[in-house]
Length: 383
Ligand SMILES: Cc1cc2nc3c(=O)[nH]c(=O)nc-3n(C[C@H](O)[C@H](O)[C@H](O)COP(=O)(O)OP(=O)(O)OC[C@H]3O[C@@H](n4cnc5c(N)ncnc54)[C@H](O)[C@@H]3O)c2cc1C
Image 1 (cartoon, rainbow, N blue to C red):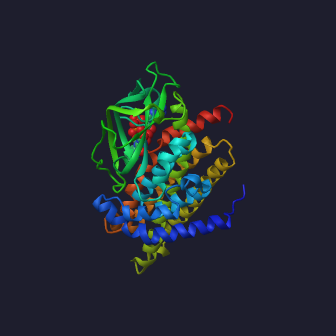
Image 2: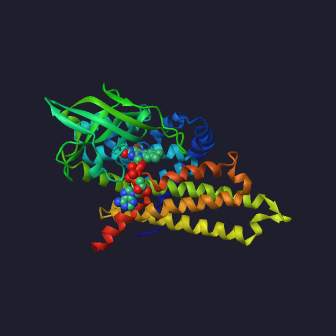
Image 3: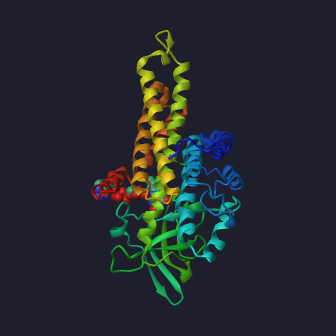
């Protein structure tokens, strides 16, 4: 792998960085305090290509390479965890399954309005009140054929973008006998009768990224809203998550980068014992560790993204990158607060918010424990 970014990728980073610095970062505190969704910035992301990162140009997307997509999410994470999570979920979970598994008719119908920034966003929900890590065995939401329709019943939980989505891809059981070929993906427009999106969850962080429970009460959609192959929903979901994990890892790198920058600024300005705290070796070592770990995480994200673009297997590398980057972000944000002393615990300083936002990253799109399972399983298989 060539570890130097191409000129195009470097320019892309600059463009996205400038946009985030102008439109996203200044609103991050307000978005968190008011639990508001930053629609004004999201509207402007359409023309920039941030809403169709993996969507082919014929459907209006920017279809950038996977490293560029990771760069975009990292920059958004640097600016605002909430906004970044919603845009990551929109691209990685909401639109990618359509790109990968959709029919031509589904792509033409659903993708163009999502990538312009004029419409709403996309979402995918597999998690249920009783099933998160164990989707294969735990999913009870089911769909059955009635005439020309699918009729869906059940309850879902933790749907990022549920209340701001145009459609939600719902992972349902289509074969009641169970097993690895019993799940399927179905596209459900959010205005479908019987689909109830609950009020936004009150969370520890990421408050400007709406997360909603979703219930299906005899939700009826045409049979051709089935996405991909009936019974291949587990496989399709796991493949979608591989890409999503690169994205969550990149988001974590952005959060850590922002926390480190705050810590550097603070360490240079704060005086103790007659000199800036930046002159104490204890502070310098925390900063050196942060810079080193961020660098290592970023490179492991790029590597997984590069493998993906080479059409090589990347499940293990994506899990490793997500595991390392998200656990690294927690350490870096924790130390950024430590460097701020008491002020780090105050809502006046961004590190407090960034720390709360970072906490989700080791849980969403597969917990750290699940990443370790994925890595060790492949390792033991000699892969
Ligand atoms: C803010 C937020 C946004 C989210 N967005 C989405 C979304 O858009 N779509 C969606 O479908 N879901 C979403 N989720 C759900 C998220 O993916 C799940 O919370 C996550 O996968 C963990 O599932 P769980 O919460 O059911 O935990 P559980 O699976 O119940 O796990 C509980 C604990 O047990 C551990 N554990 C479970 N199984 C094993 C095992 N075999 N070995 C070792 N340890 C194990 C876990 O690691 C964890 O520590 C979101 C969650 C949050 C909080």
